[in-house]
Image 1 (cartoon, rainbow, N blue to C red):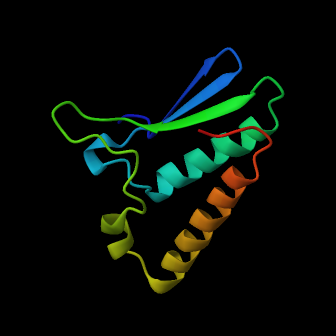
Image 2: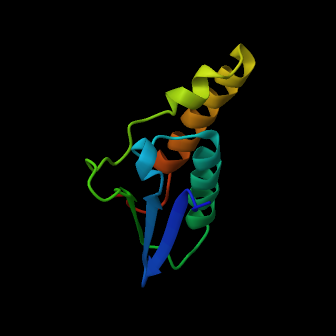
Length: 104
């Protein structure tokens, strides 16, 4: 199984690539948690001066940064799981918004 998030350092630049091209890089719980952990770790890494977030594309398909939440996964969640998922999305993107470095 492929990693859902690819992370690569190029000097002071951290490149985070959402790696679910078969699902147009939509955020599953797994990707959301992995991405959130990477964002939190980067915020405390003094060597990181900028973060670039991009999405992987599969050969022959339309490239997509991300189509948002994974609605296929969400369809199988109960109400409590959906609330937790929505709150996790909100908290994760608040963490991105509050990063100490620029994000592209």
